[in-house]
Length: 218
Length: 218
Ligand SMILES: Nc1nc2c(ncn2[C@@H]2O[C@H](COP(=O)(O)OP(=O)(O)OP(=O)(O)O)[C@@H](O)[C@H]2O)c(=O)[nH]1
Ligand SMILES: Nc1nc2c(ncn2[C@@H]2O[C@H](COP(=O)(O)OP(=O)(O)OP(=O)(O)O)[C@@H](O)[C@H]2O)c(=O)[nH]1
Ligand SMILES: [Mg+2]
Ligand SMILES: [Mg+2]
Ligand SMILES: [Zn+2]
Ligand SMILES: [Zn+2]
Image (cartoon, rainbow over all chains, first blue to last red; front, side, top):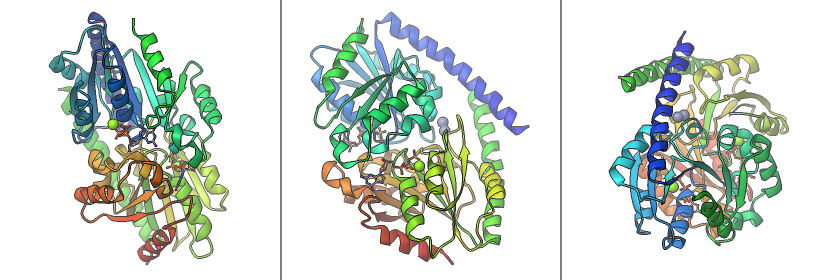
């Protein structure tokens, strides 16, 4: 049966991915690097959040960034402009980063010891949920323009994340989005999920994100 | 090699999908149904656009709707509230609808002859691009909150679509989005792509969408 064959291959792929994710985890551990996998729908604000963070904290933390996109180096160019070490991965038809791609990017970039490595995944609220990259923390970004039902409709990503950032709160006056409902929906899928609300544009709430980052660094 | 095995299975999957898409296309043809596959990032406004359309045109067109989501029947419930025939497909871990799912939904729902069948795909700007459902028209919705670079960064979806709807133009005053750039980026990927700008909230531009629908009905 074709369905069974497909599932078997998928298990192979995930098993191989898990091995390389474990390898990446060892690499990060050896260099005392905090690795963070940033996931979201296209356009929720992952790169904008990185631009703000890298600029605001550049004097206190050594950052390196891996950018994942189907095409273009636009996001890597934006990160490069902040003066941060960055590698772009283009996945072509691919819908997510995998641990193998991240392993090669790490070998090429020599990330700073004792620093933070951000991995911005392909904008996709579904497929990246299945692929461990070896990160310590998975951060899902949602924006208030997407609707407060997203955690219920795309549960895997919220289930596998540690922190949920609700971005673009400067737009709350113009969209029918209830913060309370969104947070309740997210916690229903994942009771342990932490939540931070902020706006990359106005800067409101960024301090809570910076404190969270500090608390995760050892 | 693992990579080659994965690609071979993917080709099998796409071949089988193409056969069933052709079957669906024959079904739609036999009943003189205009089938439209609605694709976008999560939360761009696909269901809201359907709610408006089904309500505004209910006296002139017989609509049926197939809803695709990982989880919940929320979108089908919203469509049902407009008085329209609707079937919900839940894909679970799956990241896109395929022609097989649509075939079964069609058999269960008995869509109206001479009408329009809308298929709302899973919110995902990557994977649904590869899966023909047998539709006549593929409509990609993007919203101005996602950024005007989306066509360049996620080209497959814009390359395979016939119409691009740029939604949420009521939010243009609050986001750094250039309509000119977005349209130029979309046409660079697909010179034949038609573009309509509108707001489901204010109603501005909906008339152009309704005219487009009318022009595609035979
Ligand atoms: N109003 C408002 N707009 C924002 C905010 N954060 C980001 N944006 C805008 O949202 C759009 C998308 O931002 P990006 O940072 O490119 O989003 P992304 O998640 O990196 O997008 P992909 O990499 O394509 O998935 C851009 O036009 C940003 O200016 C915010 O807090 N408020
Ligand atoms: N301001 C504004 N908000 C809109 C507009 N259209 C839709 N929205 C809002 O955008 C959010 C998402 O809308 P939906 O229609 O659920 O989006 P969707 O594409 O069906 O989402 P998924 O099915 O989860 O992929 C909701 O809060 C809508 O109210 C618009 O034109 N302007
Ligand atoms: Mg980005
Ligand atoms: Mg919807
Ligand atoms: Zn995928
Ligand atoms: Zn996928």
